[in-house]
Amino acid sequence: MSLRDRLRSISLRQRVTLLFVATGLLASIALSTASYLTARSYILQRRDEVVDRQAFNNAQLIRSQIRNRRSEAFELISNVRTEQGGFAVLHLGPENLYFSQEIRYTQAAFPSTLIESALAGVTARQRFDIDGKPYIGVGVNIADIDVQYFEAFPLDDEQRTLTAIGSALIVGVVVVGVLAGLVGVAVGRRIMRPLERVSEAAGDIAEGGLDTRLETEVDPDLARLVTSFNDMADAVQTRIEREARFASDVSHELRSPITALAAAVEVLDARRADLNERTQQALDVVISQVRRFDQMVIDLLELSRLDVGITDLHREDTALEPLIRRIAQRYGAENLRIETVPNFDGVASIDKRRFERIMANLIDNARLHGGGATRVSIEPVVDESGTRTGTIVAVEDSGPGVAQSERTRIFERFARGSAGRSRAGGTGLGLALVSEHVRAHGGRTWVEDSANGGARFVVMFPEEIA
Image 1 (cartoon, rainbow, N blue to C red):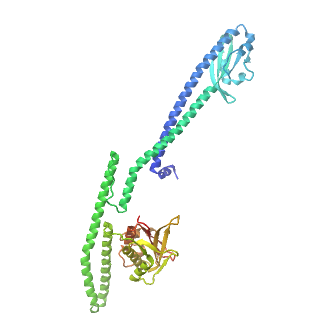
Image 2: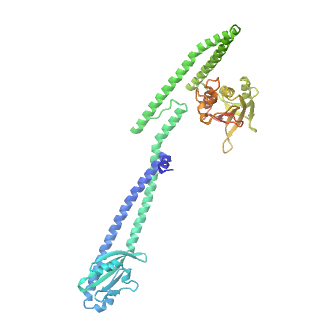
Image 3: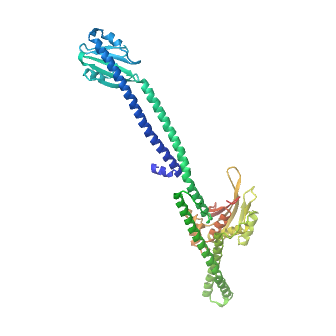
């Protein structure tokens, strides 16, 4: 996964927090680095001034004394007052002799470039380390007497000071990073709060709460968002209600002509014996289509009532197995096998009228497209703690099953799977009605493969309305 893909997978709140942390860290690191370099430059510059002044003073003292006491060079260099931890070396040019203040530190302790510069007649200064300890060395050329004076000054105090400053700045960077993260979390929550309200409102609208609206915001940017969302919700509600009224009105207006057609067809069917064979075949087609049309109008009227929410839900605890058996007998499936999971009472809180429509449509769907229902199973839904959270009723058939790509679409209105398109009958509304009635209970509907290779239509009723 690329860095861009990883960033896209991070939530907006996390990205805001990371942005604040990154900005805070970059700003604090830049400021700390600048502060450290400034402090280091200032401290070392002041140290260089002190070192130069002391080295030149000692060199001047050597110059005034060695003119008449050149043979006492060792004694003279031994009497030079250097800082604690520092040392000095004296070089006599004509004799090419070095005299060290301490036996531990000779001219070899100084950098060769510093020695060469002083011997070449150039006064120089250079930083170096001895056994891991920092020093600054000064080489002073005393030209009139051909003598070179070298002195080393310890930088332990300066190093400790810079270490303390650096540690303090690192702690400051960490503190700034933590504070920036906390600010980022707070800002992310504040930014996400309006979006969460929008998401919740959109979810309520998607679940059927078309009158859901956002409250007015004081912030002008958020106010525009609220206004746009509410305007969109108004437009959606108006359109859905208009379409629902249109479908309801059309379905209602179609009832009268369909009733007249049905009556006329029954009259013709009663005089079937007077018709020739070809006319009887045409009459059979008309009868089947009128009945299908009549059922479609009934289903559309029911869906219209569900859409506008004029049907109530009356739930009561009901033993499902005997109820399903009565429904199966009523719809011509007397031999349907109904099984309840052992040690389960098979009682669920349902609306009996809606449940009958659900089971009737599922049995009819299995008859039309699945070779008939073969089994109905009743099972409890249990969570991880063993608490019952709902009840599942599954209707299995012996048909070809439902393709994976069609398992969601077949619950839409007028949607028919590939198996349904190859068979006559059905209105394409039965499974949509099942889905709507189950949704009214707060449950959900899906289809999967059954153990015998057919389809298994499953409806789940929760213990309480979601």
